[in-house]
Image (cartoon, rainbow, N blue to C red; front, side, top):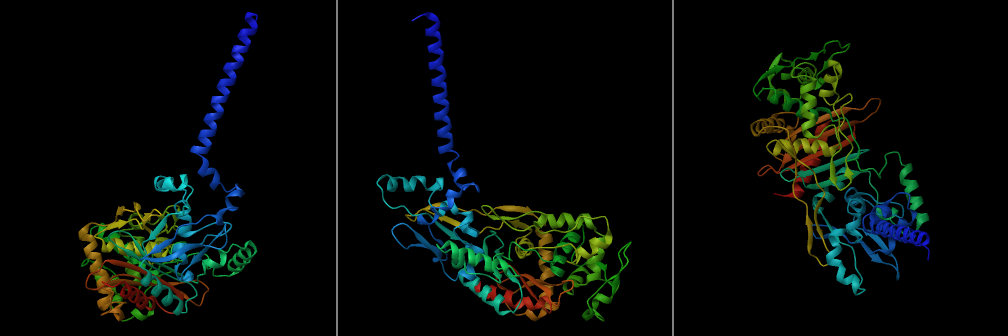
Length: 483
């Protein structure tokens, strides 16, 4: 060949070789590193075609299966749920369209594609042996979860939720919500039945598919005074510091005064000054409205709320994040005053208010809530254990002890005294008015059991009446947890 032709052929071979190497590299990258992302892409319809051909692993707690798969023919597996309505906030559902709850958070561990299962599953895959997904162990206490769900349902509340945290570790022991639904109704293999179930549940005004414990927020009423009292301690007050009280308080620039509850007339809240512990125990609106409006003021309360977790979404399992709770950052004293008694634009999830109680109980340290305890391979070996993680320090140890004294005073002689002698050692009641509604958001947060307090509880029931009416539910749940 002529030299010019040889050079042209040489360049062609080099270009072809480079293109082949680039193609192989791209295939390797896509299949090796991007395969999972492509499978999970919302635009990839094929991810839903074979989802019931996988033998997903179970979700368990306290040795009980809460969710598991069972073969229905040679190719497909049906997902089943035990006491589905009670555990729906924990397990979520696995449908032809999507998944929620732990079914979503640990989707790839349950379906066996998680990298942490690669070694344990490799030999079985090579010899063609059937390989099921891994097992997810949840942190919930099954007895207490059932007791919580039954108590919320029996309360007659239009909406209700309960959360219990292990204050030292952040483990979620109870995550209950009503109205609820049976995940089995939407996890059917029959697409038409699933669509009808979703349509029916989606049309219900109280949205049973939406977990009220973590994904909805409500005005927390006087339970938020726990945050305000903590900000006063942080600013230098003590439980015995004399604070402003009185029957009425008008914030600077406000057109309307904030008053104490009618039931407080003639009590200690009427006095001009009382000890902080007494103001908290009797839930004097004027005291905490003044604190939020003037001293220590909006900046201090807002900062304290942030230390407990307000202002952001709380991730409690992989990809599962709560609705954000909030306290207004404002230069208007009237708005800050209203927000400081848990009304106005202050809102919180039951999970968030349980974190407030847990931070007080845990010597001021707020632990990140978590719903997964362990992940196990199909052979039973432990692949991963979720370790406790500190989110923040909301209070010093000494300040936290004083806050516990305040919460104990509520039960000893304050608005929660009907709980005296129960498993609840300390707490705070809260009643939030809902504008234009015949019901209130009735709150109780607290800790117990009395002889060895280690659980933080938050209960919200939506019905007529006062926050203390949620207290017996909290006591019943703590009783179920035992010592």
